[in-house]
Image (cartoon, rainbow over all chains, first blue to last red; front, side, top):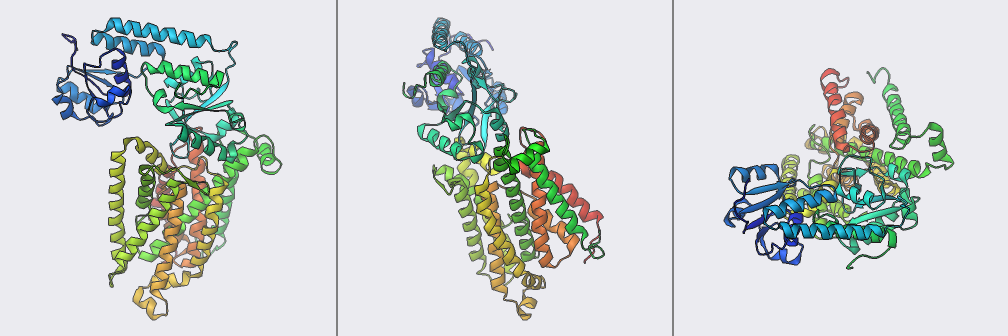
Amino acid sequence: MELEACPQRIISLAPNLTEIIFALGLNQQLVGVTSFCDYPEEARQKEIIGGLVDPNLEKIKVLQPDLILGFRGNPRRFLDRLYEEKLPLQAFEIGKTFEDLFSLIDRISRLTCTETRGQELISSLRERIKLIEARIPRPVTRAKVFLTLYGQGQELWTCGQNSYLNYLLSRAGLQNVAADFKANWLAYNPEKLIADNPNFILILARNRQAFNQATKWLESLTALRDITAIKNKNFIFLDENLFSRFGPRLVEAYEWLIKAVYFASDSEGK
Amino acid sequence: MSSRRKPWLFPAILALLTVAAFLLSVKIGAVRMSWQEVRAGLFSGGQYRDIIIHLRLPRAILAYLIGASLALSGVILQGYFRNPLADPFILGVSSGASLGAVLSLELGLTWTIFGFSSQSWLAFLTSLLLVASVYLISERRRLRQGESLLLTGIAAGAMASALTSFLLFRRADAYEQAVFWLLGSFALSGWKEVWLILPYFILALIVSEYFAPEMNLLALGDEVAQSLGCPVRTTRRLFLFLATLLASFSVAVAGIIGFVGLIVPHSVRLIVGPDHRPLFFYSALTGGAMLVWCDLVARTAFTPSEIPIGVITAALGAPFFIYLLNWQRPKHS
């Protein structure tokens, strides 16, 4: 779809897209967000058009957008409906690598007449990646790590090969024990985990308190007690909100990861 | 398969299947090992000790206990309602448990007692509470109490489900957690679950065996049973309590596993006949063995990922059940 002029009324259907829009300095132009868009703080003051899977068509129409940014996680039926209604929708894939992120930022900046700002953003992110990677101790040890999402029932959910989290881990010089599995997310087999014997367990949790609960829970599982990471209490807290946004803050997540693993620094609150 | 001519045949086959299920459950898993390594792990340690002693063995025993509890609960309720469609969840135990689990998420509860999460506890308590209120409400009716109880149970279950859906709808972020919880999983279950359930299960089995003759009388109808000296009201209450307790425990520990409580009692009835004494006993044992087999398939078919066990119980159990119902002539009727 060709856009004639620079969009003045933008609606975002995903939190990571909202973050990109703010990073491009389009605060004024953004008129609608989802209920999950909580970063930056100003995003909370925008009109809410519904959730990720249940955006409200009436709310969207009444805001008279001239650009709607959607993504693959929005229901297909809903996006199709927006097309049918001839609403100015642009839908994006969630990518896997930093290059995918940069191309996402680039495409959005082109759509919104902020190419210069977009290029600046991309090069500053590239610079930060270079700086933090220079701090990774050489030679790279490729420590075995297991990343898990706390709170999903009594199972060990982890990220497989197709996830951008796996990309971050491997780029940070770590070896994700679940990297052989194609899936984005999977419930990991505890027997495999014992056999893999990771050195670190990275826990995605809502906050410190949830993280502490998760470590207590893992330590209470008799079967897992001989795993190096658990025996040595090598648990690392990853902020779920930060690590779940495929936007400019992905670089911040990457910095957090590297600092936590190699410098045992408590990245919370920075 | 005539159990009249060869009364030892069914127990022998069952024993064989049970032993085989346990041996294979301890042997097969995501991590491959030889029989020697399994034996070493069981009796003398070795590198796979934790996998065998703290993952595979408690998991198989727990699956056995849950299967046995569900089958016993189902056979009790089928006798209680004199209705072949009755199963452990007919009075709303599963809907009550779901509501409890979701309620715990909604309230943001995060405590654990005896190593069990607030979700499990609330699921257990809500399901007991739901059945208790269903019972108290329907008891007001004098005639055809069984029917009233059944329908009240179904209605209350629907209400609980509606409330669950509403809470889930309002809290999109809790949705996934709740769904995973409800699907249930034995993946990380250990000895503490086994020790929690074992005493209740054994007690329930002994009590129901003891009162099995009364259940036989109830099968003749309440009036006849009363005239033959059976304390109908007390017996009914007792059995309802036992069946609900078994079902609630199972749901709280393992999630909702359908079908075992329905088909095992029927299948066993076709083999051992309608007398509740052998029926209770063999239903429990068969249910246990069946769930160990199903769990084995669930965790090994697509290793290292697991299929929800309810999928297996239905996929394997249903065809067998249809065969039994339609091709096997009952010997006791």
